[in-house]
Amino acid sequence: MTMIYFDNGATTFPKPVSVINSINTANKRFGANPGRGGHKLAIKASELVYNARKVTAEFFGVSNPEKVIFSLNCTTAINTVIKGLLNPGDHVIISSLEHNAVLRPLDKLKAKGITYSVAQVIEGDNDETLSNFRNAINEKTKLLVCTYASNVVGIKLPVERICSMCHQYGILCCVDAAQSAGTVPIDLSDSSIDYLCVSGHKGLYGPMGIGALIINCDVIPDSLIEGGTGSNSIDYAQPLILPDKFESGTNNFSGIIGMGEGIKFVSSYGQMKIYKKEIDLLRHVYDKLKLMKNIELYTQRPNIDYYVPVLSFNVKGKNSEEVADELSSKYNIAVRAGLHCAPLAHKSIGTLNTGTVRVVPSVFTTNYDINSLISAVYKII
Image (cartoon, rainbow, N blue to C red):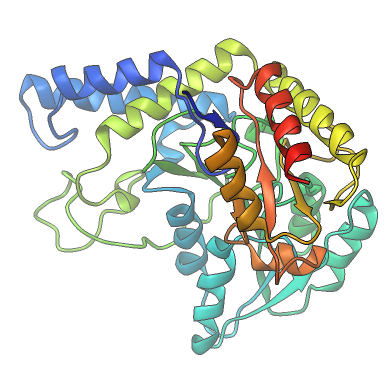
């Protein structure tokens, strides 16, 4: 029996056939180190990586593909920005919905004299949210890091307004788009976002182990690691040219190819078409859960103006992990339970001690899947 999968907020599954085929082809026919040799296989591998870099740049509206830096994941991209820009005495602003990918690096940097403030996100009130970010600015604020949308409750932040405000104060702006890239159209050609960090294995439908940092300004962070790049090998110093400065060591060749093919899939299907489909499916779940007794919901009814397709709920009297285990073991339905690596978000909605059951559809989710979930939750309560 095939499992009904709603854990797409962690990793989308299944993957498009085109993505799987591209990974297999990369490993079967061109599995040499890109940029590390002059033989035919290495040259072909380099061409395929460049093509994926170009596809990624075009998808996000970046004119220079060299400013697309492939990384292990979105977390690595975020760490590169945070640790590559900040110095002792600097101040950072983050939102009240941040993932540990943002919170933990900054918490560690407190020992080096780097401080941060948390701006409260107000659901349904972008003006008040923006005001909270503005009030957190001080004379030492160098960087603002915020999620595009919460991975717990799906609330979108007014990122363009926030980043535009940052530029008025001379502050750099980094956006964690792990839960939005591929779902929400993001065009950096007309954007105040300085650094966009994306995950390849979620809304871009690529494999796990790949992400990207997209640099959209002239301030280049320091590299997170140093090592072999296949360029300037006689020089002990790390190359300054992009993307070499950030891509030391053998990169995830098949992952990069798969991510590029995933982006092509999203483009071909249509981003807004995917976005609207997933929101509509989630609204149906929301409406049915709203009618059930003993169900706790934590946001207003989701729509494309203020939310990405992420929904959290709890069954009163039951632990979130207990509900998730029952959905899996009895009804063959996969959801995510717990804190979702985002304690700030759970603190904001009052679920730090309980966590939530999280439901995230994908382009492959069907009405049958949705109705099966609703039926199973009804039986559980």
